[in-house]
Length: 302
Image (cartoon, rainbow, N blue to C red; front, top):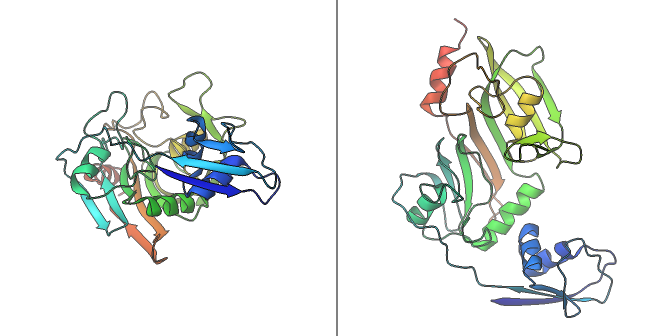
């Protein structure tokens, strides 16, 4: 357990931002600490993230020691593209869930990480050790993993500042008149089906830049670059402009023009970031899975 204390200098600063900076944790982690009664203003616990501070106020933050992970290490094959003392870049296959949750207690990426890596950060919580960001179960591709809290905080801040370069390849239904475009539409929970995401007024900012790479038969191979990283962002945005990802069982048409099985043909093929310790610019790329490549070949215009 660690205790942090600081005095406010700027008027009107949000408590969650001040607490995060004070304790060296992410904003979301600071919010969780507040809900658990671990953040106090002038000796009184304060759970409201947007509480406005005034100069001279004393803020204290208590960060409990990370709870031992309930997730168990499992001997699951894991493609480690790169690793050092601070981080790892791993390739997640389609069909694998990132972290344990209801209905997926085993067989996840976290279970594999606990087996193959000697250290993982604790900021993500006991069921998400090392997890800095996620991709969907049926999306394949590259993921960043933090091996200590310093790296986790740095990488999370880079993502928040839109400084992490993330690019995907997808095969989407239909053809485009344009060669490139941008979808800028807020995403939130679907108002009726809470398991789905949707473009909704008041949702979180979401921006996807797309570029056509190859015209196919009844489909297009595109690259998508994310400014933000919302849940199901590419799938929701492309469906919203009439070009759902081929094979998407949630946002695609009820009757797909092609019998794709195994989920959406979406692959996180590139990731770039500044190394949290050295500041060195790092960039990694990985090819899509054979399933993706087979469909690309099937749909090529001869």
